[in-house]
Length: 127
Image (cartoon, rainbow, N blue to C red):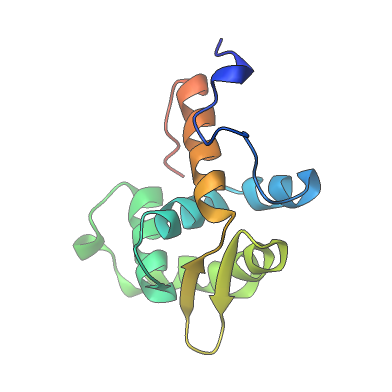
């Protein structure tokens, strides 16, 4: 078991969200994937690109092998539910008109927390 004082995401071990907001952001695998993908970007990332990446992760195949229905299924879920939730709690910044998703001050800390939980649990999630 990893000691709590050895957490990897900063000297104050803080995520700039309250507990309910953080749990809401992290309680769904697609939202966790979005947070990690956005945290790994230097700028914004488009909804379509995120949907493709998540579909590939969930289905365990390369993006180039995805069909339109596989992409669309993930895109619709992100558009209708997950991105608004993440934006509302401040986990990411989402512009529904342009499809741009950007990091907030909470994104990197949440991504680090997700990676830490995965490491402690011994496996990276796929779907």
